Length: 263
Image (tube, rainbow, N blue to C red):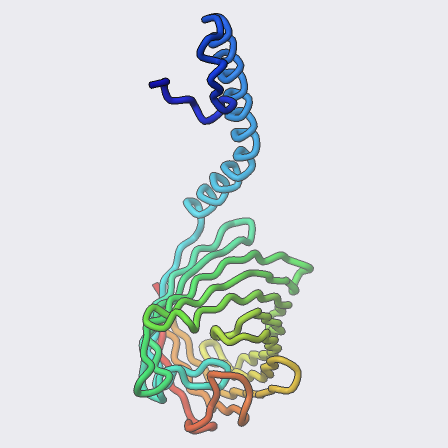
């Protein structure tokens, strides 16, 4: 029985059995050089990826970390309740690097209805870039995973412009909540300080899926913040129809109270 042939060698031929010993040595030497070149090429290709990972790890290690816990009377996302109109808790962790890069994760339970319940883990990362003394841009990516209902998982790209008292954002997904269509969400937010700890909040947004499925949402409220606590009370509304999940069978207009502790 012939000895096993290394994978990088040419296919074994019966004629090779009668070849002189130096021929086998030469093939072995060729194989060694070939494998060495392959390992060198792999190292060259992997070097940029390894360098990028090391840079990201370094930035995360030196980033400023924060965490928050929120209790909300109704978990509303773009006007639609994800808690079956019941109170819900959220946990969030964020890391902000000095160069404007950031990453974070949010964990919560979701209840689309009595039969569909799951935990939601959303991870996101991006970078913020200053464009002027009071203007900045933000671009990033998020992924939402539903542990008990992975068919709802979706990826979303976002970009925004941010001022001291306003925000405009654009969000695009190729499979919004696991549905087989693309979505585009546009929003605008405004913040008006009233006193040291008080401010008025206003939000409008519109979600578009495919070519003819639209839903608008709005929020107006009042916020009070005194570190490490923030309390918000808002009136939230959403239009009929639109892509799933929708406000069908829910109150389309309701008051929402939330309390957040930041650590």
